[in-house]
Length: 270
Length: 369
Image (cartoon, rainbow over all chains, first blue to last red; front, side):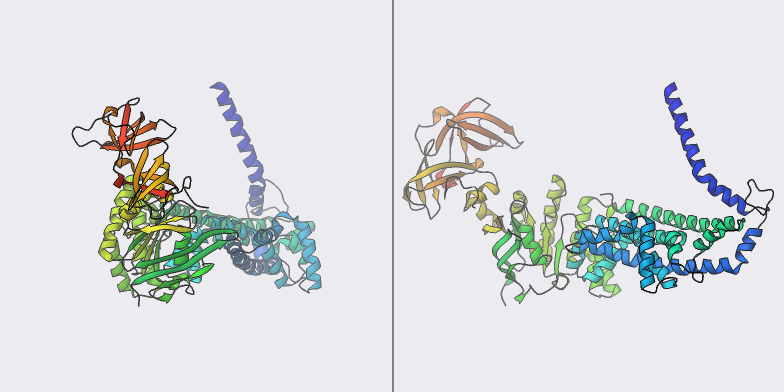
């Protein structure tokens, strides 16, 4: 009993340390963003909202934030559409090279980001997409597509093809069999893919660094260049805003999953 | 117009090098309950899928109501299908599942509501419209699947091992339920199963499949009494097989020299003197008697030792080892008074009426190439 207790304590200590190690930097950034001091100093001497004011009052930050949003939304929607279509095609179609295609689409997952970034940079120079909004959208679509495809493909493999066959014999065309039967069943996975794409695109730095220009620059790239120059707590305020966004998206995903899991539980317990 | 609702003309299906279905000729009368019976992989489900339009035949024609069926996609065939695993849509409530085929046909909301209510009452689950399929038991799910496949009044109803996932007791209940629905609605049904008892109980006609072909088809009694091959005799019910050589032919009967006794049996029309043959005797026709009551060398009279006794409630099954290596099974009803019982190790004699034995050509056989 004694040794078991000792073991429990060790385990608890490791968990606490690990949590502190992971959460502390985030917590410190959030705290510093409300600091009254003009430097990145911890603990801050007093409370103030000046850095949020400096963020939202600065046209450079607002412009780069708006670029990020303009890239994020079409990229996430595009990746979700294309990723879902490829997952359905790979799971159901009788293409000879289906697994090869799946592997190619998943490549951005596996290939080091810096290599992808350099490759995209080279291609976009040749195609005149360098430094354009469209270029960023395309690049982010390619980067986030694997996430959508992975989640949707897993969901497609859970949907029995027999359900579609049943729909066909009941008078549904392939088109309505997909929209009435298959799609509702994979929808939770598609939405998770969409939310992940939003977050990943919004947080993306490396590829954006390569292909953005001073006039078309997402907020992460602006933060990067700012950190290398003068460092003031505005950065912490921006980081807190980005962090809150990600947290919010994850929370939606979590809540949605919980409600759909509850439904699945009552409808698949046979 | 023919009286047949469905005709299959030389249907064939080849997957790569494997012939799944080989030259199926079959007609289904209006209102008939036809069962395709066979071991797994014998082509019965593939045949069903081709009729449903979920697999396309390599060769052959299908006619529904005298019109060619081949070119129609499944959703234009108006053929209902019930799958083994119910295939209810898990994200739709029961009423929505049943309404699905009606919605696909663009019927009015009022019509849909009425028909859904009617069919749910017909399958005995009128109050279940608001549940999700996952909240129902297996038997209830299959009733809903049946309701969904019937609600749009299809020309033909296909069922692919619909009771395969249910336990024995529920299966027997559902068999009666399906027969009741068939009688009440007059639907034409093709039913696929590998369970011979189910086939015998439910069908107007049974087509026995083996290796992608129909080896015999006819009413259940006919198949049971007059199997045309050892395969059918062994697949439908239990049979004893006694090999022998035909020594004489007399009208409907023939004499055979068996390994253990002279035999006399009804004969297959093709049997001639000198042919190798197998005599088929059902266990319920093998009568057990005391050895001293039997005469040596009498026809259809064997001696042996009881090697196993299986108590089945109303009846008792004996396994009797003959002088050779063969075994004979005998089923004795117990209700009648004065039925002698035997125990393991007892010496017994067996006899049966020649009318109850059937000689079929072939020695080994079981199934063809």
